Length: 167
Image 1 (cartoon, rainbow, N blue to C red):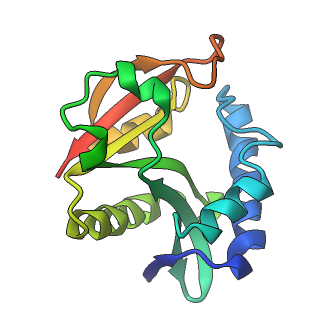
Image 2 (image 1 turned 120 degrees about the vertical axis):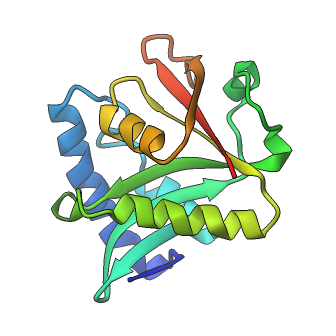
């Protein structure tokens, strides 16, 4: 098992994981992702900017997460404990459906949190769709605290929930 920065050669696998997860999201009523988001270009940009991390086991990429210091402006209305300059933001994350339930997401988040803690960050800000119950449970299980609801990208039809973890 290893966690590493994503490489351009990972993009097909990352897209395959994303496409598989979108099917599960739709089946559960979660519209956070769809066929066009996150797009190949968005994920390639994440890789090129060294923001995408992958979980790899036996030379197979089983999951990914994007972490950077790009906090959505909508975060400004959330009562965070930490200032945005002191926290990293988690964005897109997914685990291959065949590897779900095996601790992949927790291991990936452990390593990425540790990486940024050692870089001087004091915690994580993140959000997920109100209907993404599995991700909300994961955040809560991992010690993230609910901080409020928000809309993203001027979409008033979709609600998101914000979480924060202080290291």
